Amino acid sequence: MSTPSLELWNAAASTPFSPIIGKNLHSPVAFLLLAIGAILTVVFSINKSLALAPAIAIPASVAFGIGSVYALAAGGVYV
Amino acid sequence: MRSSNSRVSLLATLLLAASHLGLSLDVPPVYKNTNLLRTIDASKAYVKETIAVIIENISHQPQTEYYLPLLVSGSSAVSYVECKDKKDGTPCTAEAVDDASEYPLQYYKITLPKTLKPSDQITLAVTAGITGALTPVPAVIGQSDKQFLSYTGAKFVPSPYFTEKQKTKFRAANGEIPDYTIHELTEKSGYIVTYGPYDNVEPWKTDAQVDEITVRFEFTNPIVFMEKLERDIEVSHWGNNLAIEERYWMTNNGAKLKEQFSRLSWATTAYYNPPTAAIKSLLFPLRVGSKDAYYTDEVGNVSTSKFRSDSREAILDIKPRFPIFGGWNYSFVVGWNNDLPAYLRHGEGDGYILKVPLLQGPSQSTSYGKVEVRIILPEGATNVKYVSPITIHKEEQFLHKTFMDTIGRTSIKLTIDNVVDELKNRDIIVTYDYSTLAALRKPLVVLGSVFSLYIVTAILGRIDLSIGK
Image 1 (cartoon, rainbow over the protein chains, first blue to last red):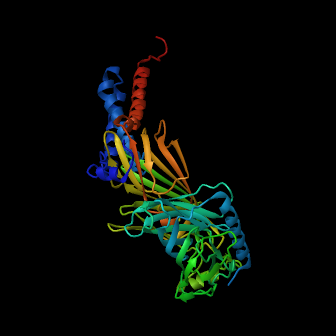
Image 2 (image 1 turned 180 degrees about the vertical axis):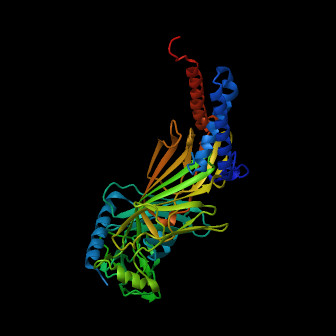
Image 3 (image 1 turned 45 degrees about the vertical axis):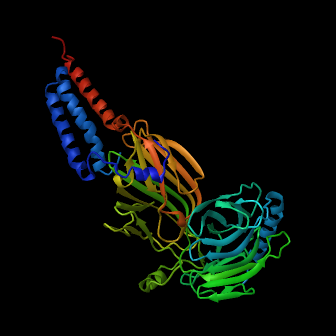
């Protein structure tokens, strides 16, 4: 990154920071992802086969990972 | 009115300064001040001194450096000095002359915006903020009494150059000026006391007669002084948020209460809202778009606050739990959130540019003893650089650990001493690199932990724990 300056700031006027989702979507997205994670966990708990891990455990982990970050943001803890 | 203590103090200060002048700093007499107008603005909780001076190069060589001393007597201290070419507004640099000795005359070396050829002139406008120069006289007053402040300074600017014409204007907070030193060519008009114009003022010399001015004037506002301010600016890419929290340790430097505080008297006078030297409320004008404001103190949430935010303004109006009279202290916390896109832009590659106000604070005239600004960037941000609008006295880089952090968030702490509110609302620009991998660190940590749990559960589920067949 170049030396900070007002010129650098002005030059980047066309590229403001764009979040993946807006603040108003933190709650619903977090709820959806955590719900998906919970459902997949239930499915996994019924049949704890290692062969099912890639199909169920990985999507569930991804859902929990991103969902937990957004859940905290929805609660006002901006991590 | 002349306060004998302040007179002796000033005289000692000036003599000490003069005695040091010849030893420490040798200023060549290469200029003359053709016309000098000094304005001492005491309408705030500190003194703002503005010197507009036409200088002429009377040497035979081109010149670029001009020296200007400011009198820092007693407990007063210079907060900032700024300079510009008055005609075209070109800024020039003013830096304090490094002098290790006890030097009450603080010299500033001004680098002119352009080289001044022999016989050429330039008009400089120098502004300085000086704290601790106003003293309440009397030092103790009744709860409903008027507060008066006293200022004592030199009649002439202690310039090392010959001055053809100079004038000093003292601007009080209002027209109630019961006492002021009367010299030749002294005039009071409304809330302004004018000294001069005086012709042919000699350069400052050790054996010069010290002419001082003392003005005592009514000051109906409190003298808000923040002994310390801790300001956190926290950037969250995932949360799309810029969180600002300010922790204040406030005191009122005005006249102290003569007797015990009377709640009854305070409540009965509150209906007609008379001017008071106590701090009753503070108004924080925030940037447009600010939201989720809060106000707490050591006890907890303080409900006597109002927050108004719309498309034109955002104002946080807080009322402390009790009026803060002279010498009383109060510490509190205010905070708010902003959407990040207004403050953060994407630069080249993984680079980001952050532009936020370094200092905000209340709209009431305020001075600060020590300001610590912590800029907390996302975890994994690297290559942090910044440009500050105010001189930083101390800088630290550290890792700030909080929720969901593994290595801690990259943070910088900037410490500034003796600040006045004239310097607020100026933006600091910070650049940093933040890769996608670093951004994914938090969900990846959770992902890894949860996935490990699944695998462990699956393995444990396959272990046969039944009692033998």
